[in-house]
Image (cartoon, rainbow, N blue to C red; front, side, top):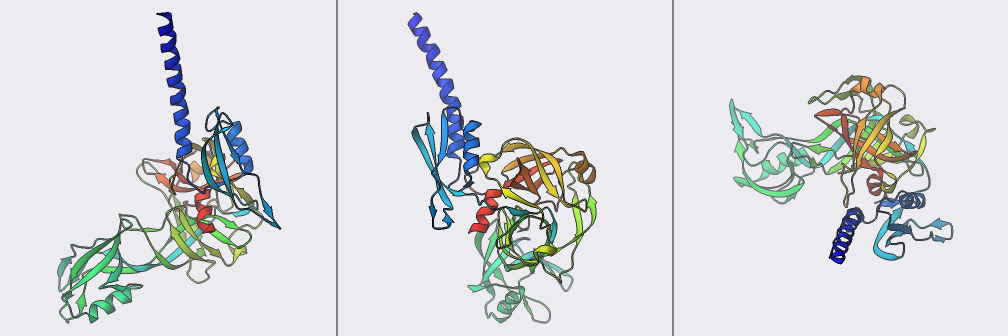
Length: 400
């Protein structure tokens, strides 16, 4: 009888131990391939037992050929320090510092395709509702012909001899087809019954700029169109210096906003990529955009943990660091602009903005002296809280 009791106790203990290990193994399994890491972050991960006391990680020894160091490596996860349970290809974080951002910038982009901004057309006092397309859709082709601008739409529609045209459009980041009837106004001009445009402008925040080639990362999330949040495929874009004229404080169920103005004359850089984790390009007039005296090293996700951190912003007129708390650091197997859950705790920033406001997207997040992410979203129900994205997702876009 005693033996059975001992066996039951041991079984329960073993089961609980395995459950605890499974939680840590889930964290390991959720790590993506080719994320960024440094040697000191691997050492810190082992010291802090982020994968459990029985699990250790090691990074292959650095290899140097001539004067160039390897930029790729491999993490080996070992149970009890010697049983390999997973190998992960990783990228080594660059050793050089980057220029730190936090500066609001003006943005303009032109899309590949034509964005639907109104699905109704008023003609001879009659409102015509387009039942196939909706606001935010991006028209990519008409009758198999590529659409690069709004002029292409009208030229193709005007020249068609058919009563209908076949449309390839993007909605919710997916390609769809539809057939639309041609509408004629009283002058006999052919129309689709929609209003379209192919340019957008707005405000965001610069995150960092690489020192060697002046490539920049900003915003932390995509420039989108419509309620379905299409990631706009861009043909070109520019960034500009902007002047902050007012801050609308955030409140519950009422997101605040940075109100800035910029003149589309003296561009400071080009936007080359619009992705789900930010916009990327190259700064042309570096000294006109950022403080060249402020640099910082980038940190990978292994160094990020819940606790105290800071965000950098110029919204007061000068570059300042504001206290925040990282509530949660998510394990992510693929890129996403909601890597972190953060809370603003700095009384100065709460007094100035009420928390996180629109226009602050891209503000650098710093923890333990490294730039580990950027602000991306605000919680509508609580403007003191929001999301952030890992900096290694952003660095990955620059490296491509």
